[in-house]
Length: 248
Ligand code: 13P
Image (cartoon, rainbow, N blue to C red; front, side, top):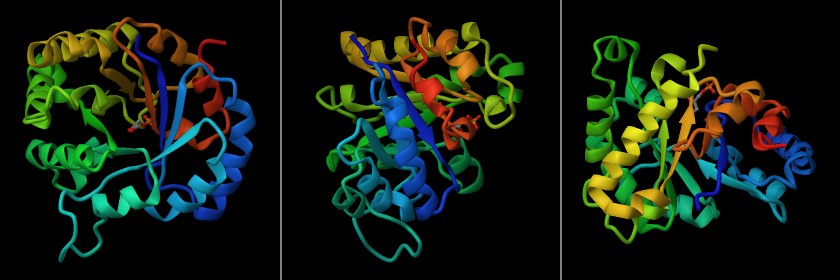
């Protein structure tokens, strides 16, 4: 049985001071949740976030990492560094990284493999543009992202991976995919995972992301192949708790 995961992606928002205050305020609001709760915070907020979330059910992750352990990569953060901080998750291949920082399915794959090597849970993102959707190539595109992104991920490791389906046209736009649209693609992702990993596909969490809010979370998370959400804007407010508590 897959446990739901409500994961916030703060993107480039929140200072360390704001982080500490926010998590202190969020803790009591989500303490009885049935879903797992996580916040993917900027690197400089990680320590404060982990301290604030200690002894609570809120887990902390990062939003990116390099695939090398160390070296001349100015401005980058390595899996070794992340592991030592104590974060549990790391987002890999968010569409904003692909669009603005030239990440490809190949670099995503290297990062997923490295994250697993360091026992970090990769939240690997995929999603189509509006043009791809209008051209009717959404599923082909997503299958390619999944297959290349997971290349050489072993059958022993695959159940640790979380997939996030985030249609690019729904990110930060206020336009949410309908629950049927989101379910259709998440089911196609699970079919692809089944082709690659057999029945283990049924244990892999697939999140939906793109304008998730308190008002639409319960319908989206109620779909058979949607195991929670990756939430941007709405995770910056305490009403994120409504998404975490979608079933109450
Ligand atoms: P919004 O929830 O702001 O649309 O962002 C979604 C997202 O990109 C999460 O990673």
